[in-house]
Image (cartoon, rainbow, N blue to C red):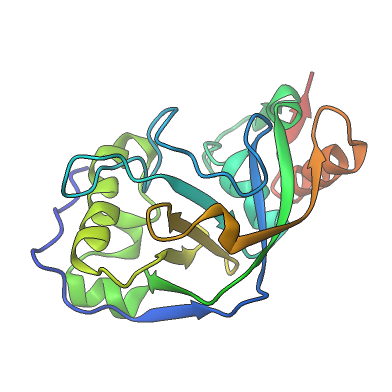
Length: 211
């Protein structure tokens, strides 16, 4: 499937504002601090990594409104809904940490929902629900938002894996690590309650954690 390229320039989108003090959940590699931005390392994702207009990598941080969405958007992200057997290795939990964050200031996020997407001529199915093979095309939309909407701190959309909960991406050249306060972190390798939460969420979707 080919996903259309973003129009240039993008028309003004609909925004969501996360007020200071908003709680967020992040499931991330344990090597990262609770609110540390990814400078552009690792494999491609739906909306990162990408470069700014000077060619510099824009750091990114994914987070979700709920723990369950954070788990489904990371650990269980690549499990197709129609898979006959749904299993994930326990190690995928053990190499990650669950961090709870609070925003330290208001953050303005571009809504990737039907009102804005319809104005831009792309469907939610294509941009949010497309397979990982389309990441090279979907990331162009994050790049376009960053370029054309200079007052955007990031993106927000309804989680493809865990609707109706929200998922977010923050632009690391406009949002800093200090714009978040870390409430607590649970290392999947040492904290059994995080493993239990991941296992329970897996059961809700028919996914089994295996050794």
